[in-house]
Image 1 (cartoon, one colour):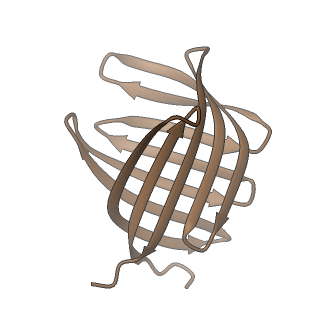
Image 2: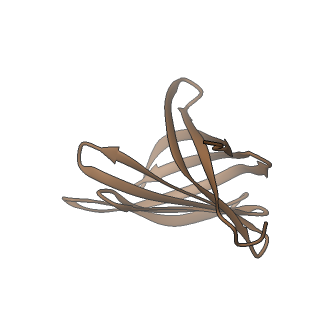
Image 3: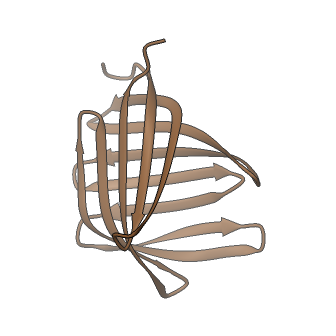
Length: 135
């Protein structure tokens, strides 16, 4: 399956501090390259279209968003990593501290503490499940 992209249905669930949950279902593409798993999808927001790429390899992950929202969130288990969140009125510095990064066939699970501009924003649990979209 190296390099061939598979159309997938993706469900993204984000839970903040084990309470507030947001869910999103989108269609996207999945592929593997060099031991890493890649998911790409687009979501349409009021501000416009946002393109998201999720890359996971071992104990590391990276979420890149471009378009109406620009964001770079790197993750590594037990390490604080600096990222950025760009909005029309400015760029915010973010910090992630991943407690868990797991990925298996059809699931990416990231648990992390999130800080924006030096202020803790809570513990986020990101669950991305995906399956082949057989039309």
